Length: 255
Image 1 (cartoon, rainbow, N blue to C red):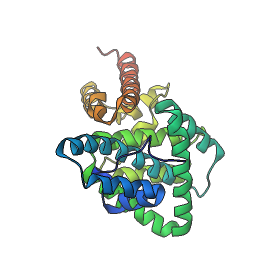
Image 2: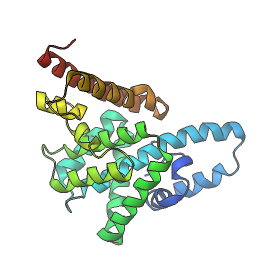
Image 3: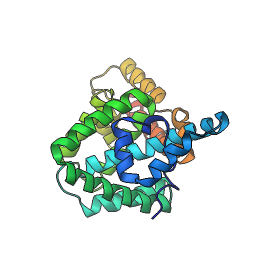
């Protein structure tokens, strides 16, 4: 299968560092050819390719961190893999579904070859790389996607939860970001407070400030450069944040 129509150009955050090294393994000759081609670009071509590279770097980072979360408990569950296939198809394309699965299988093989200790060290290095090269709003969107995957089988294993929290911290996000994203789509008032990252004992002003902060950090326009599909996913996330706010406002009689 020719990996590259979904994830094709590799400049920006995939050019060097631990993420680039892993891309070289998972994508093989494609990564090498794209990197070599970039060396002869005109200025106009490079600008276009850099934009593609930012999107593709995000998508490949999603695959790497998804592999880490799926296998966090030492098992590769059929339900989780099936969810990832559906997730990629729904959010991106049918081609993303097949190519994404092949990338995941290659990453699982790489983890097996490396051993858990070396793999975990590499994940820490990759998260630190993303902290430097990826804007915070894109990192938050990554966490939102990862939380959807972790919830695929109806529950989140302790190992998965811990891995998500570690990814947040290592990427320079607030430790509670993963818990907030895990509460998205919930139907209870408790989950609504979880989404805003506040206690039910918070004052009305604290509720308003928490929502304003979430709205600013998660506005879909902040990830528009990554493509219409990712922006659409961010819009669904933004709507769920608004629903959590509305639930709290209604319960408190706030306007």
